[in-house]
Figure 1: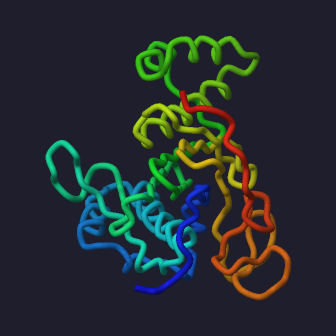
Figure 2 (figure 1 turned 90 degrees about the vertical axis):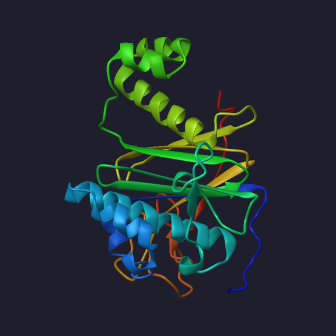
Length: 249
């Protein structure tokens, strides 16, 4: 295994990208996936969804590699179901790093991944999406929070943000003590939420050897906006540390 820096116990790392950004990234490819992952992806009939799942599983490797100092090839997540004990499904984890949590999400051409100390969960949705009917949301989310969001001047946006926060909490396990970070990635028209035990979240996007610009930078070199791991902040430049905004209730 490649030696590298130890994971930062105080912060989580979250990456957001379009599916195409990940699939075009030279540092990852389908060959990094385990056989069971490739079989699962091959069984997906819709090409767009198939690409989204593939991109999410590649992005989580990039995210884990940046956080742990391992290579993407050494950063494959595993899954095990706590109920049946079977492998290949259930919450993902990083073998050999029991204190590090990992999560991934995908939605209609967008993907996101997060890695951090303890439990972590991430969710991403297109900013233009609106969640389902209120009667459904009330069954899935705290009723008081749904009522508060529905009463706002732009209830669709408020309900979407409530939805991604709820999904992030669920993926992190929903236990007490989780903290929440939420933002809008304007470059990708995405709403993102991370639930974590970490004190802060560093957010960014993937980059590769192409044109620089918002959310993109060439890998390597010393010019501003380039990072050794091919990650920039959500608006370009270096990866962007942001504080959590409160408890994930």
